[in-house]
Amino acid sequence: MLETKIPKSIRQIIDVYIKTNFRPYTYKKLADRLNLDPNTVVQRINRNPDYFEIVGDKPKIIKLRKDLEENYFYRDKNTCQICQKKKEPNKLLIRLKDPYLKDDHNWDNVITCCQDCKDINIIKKLSYKKKIEKIGTGNYIWEYKEIEIREIYKEKNPYMELYFPDFKESESEYVHYYEFNELNGQGWYHIIDDNNEICKYLSDILNYFGSQGWELMTIKQDPPEISDMGWGMDHYIFKRKKELGEI
Image (cartoon, rainbow, N blue to C red; front, top):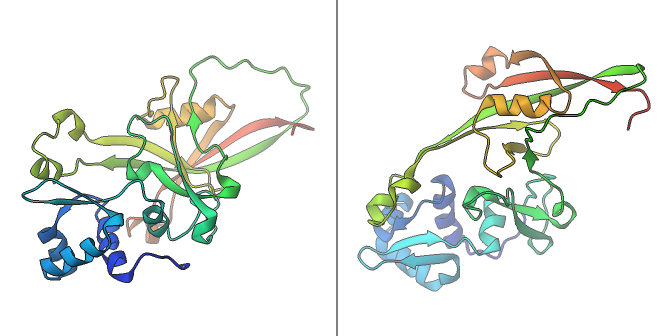
């Protein structure tokens, strides 16, 4: 990892937040995670308050600050999440992966990005408007595309209601949708519809490629040695006609 200005003692605390999806902690629970005395954790945070947000009184709740770029750079190991290149922190910035999300500043939606990739569109949109077929010359070749699809299923944070009595039940719903990887080094995408809502079904991804003229040929699985370890994914193979001379 490239150099970071975050002190080692604070990096150890941030590591806990990264491993537990940035859920809030009390001093005691944070100390238990670090196997440290609570007073040691209190002193570390008091000496470096810029990295944390402290709310409540008894018990005090410590959250990692969402508005501090350095926290995201450290989480992403100073790597642009679009081109996957490591950069010096002064050459990085943060951006929203999906500006259409209602909760657009959640940790999953803020990514580290380099200057070269800051304007690259990483959002895929599914329109249900009928596609107008282009009448071609009849001279074409077949092109092929392979993608991976995975299911995203996130449970509510079990600690929110414990720490925040006013937590609304409507905010505790599970998050469930599908996303895909085109295996082009650009990472994972989800689909949004015309209302800028995340499409929640596998068929939405298939419809997205269908609207671009792709025809699903077959679905293949990873080898057993990968699938048995829990890493396997289904690979979807598409084909479509491409006119000769088409860019």
